[in-house]
Image 1: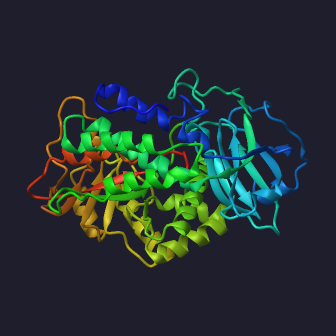
Image 2: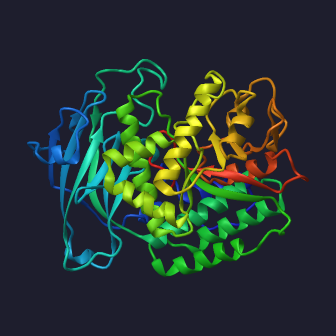
Image 3: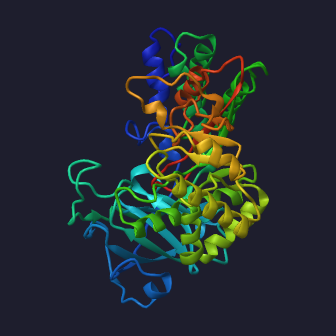
Length: 467
């Protein structure tokens, strides 16, 4: 790309940075085009149309027949299993090798009888790591993909919340193996942050510095010459090493994957959504020991324990390590206004009993991000259940009255108090963009009394957890 001096035209410079990592523009010559340096189509692909949501053991008894790219599968809510047999080229030894799968649906990867990762076309969660460093002695892999004939938000007809289209079919678009360039991936992440800061801080010194750094980054990085990657990395690292003052607002980022127990899909699909999302989460925890994930709803844990015992065993391991964090203390995330006091009490009774029996803990916070009302007796019930804190979000959706606080004491009818927090990002499924981070800090309404807030990132209702 042609080099030029920034700020002759700010928008032109900003677009230059954006298109350097775009998934839609200049994808044959920009940096993102180098993310998968080598690619090979999978030629051994067979398929079994399951009679319903069946177990892995049942799926292994099915009759598999050849399948191909471009073939459609359905109808809505059907399940299709695929056996994918892969032979990695010998010259890929030493590189990271991934399976790329795009069926325009949600799906779950199984290896050696275990659910290991969810896939979601709508969130560009296409690939699964076959080997982080390919070894010479293992060039063949066999994985199974359990394809659910629904999208992230079900299969609504003409709109997301429209009636379910009962005969929707989904086309298998891509099944490849690729090499993955982790150096390129790191550079893309750096540029995404530089671009985001330049775009969202247009009139600040830091925003201008980010735009200068982004332009210098593009100047230094020749995508056809890996030797130039080091200089581009040095530019971004120099910019990121410049710290803000310690008195600035502190954001505590916690992974989360809110999953409605019942919404636009059957209960049985909720169970698989949990497996898809939490298997991805476990995979991230194995790579990143500092990663923490907050997860509520005892009912969903119970389903995983029953249907995916190997995954549940991993969850228990990471709960013990303090990475996979059970929260909420209730059986599900129930409605906060309609149930009776007796119903509320039973939610906490059975929820806290489950978490104590399974993990040896009692939750200290009530986690209810996705309900539109809160009964006045809840602080009393929370305190009687051993809970002192409350996290919610949905009041940020108010169309008329803007709630005036993000961190405050909520006092109930009997004067019981709990510390309440509304994450100021106004979202419990954030993606970690610069825009979201800045909005979180700027939107916080209790500056002076507090200088920290919660930031919940990850895909909810499917999409397969944080990334």
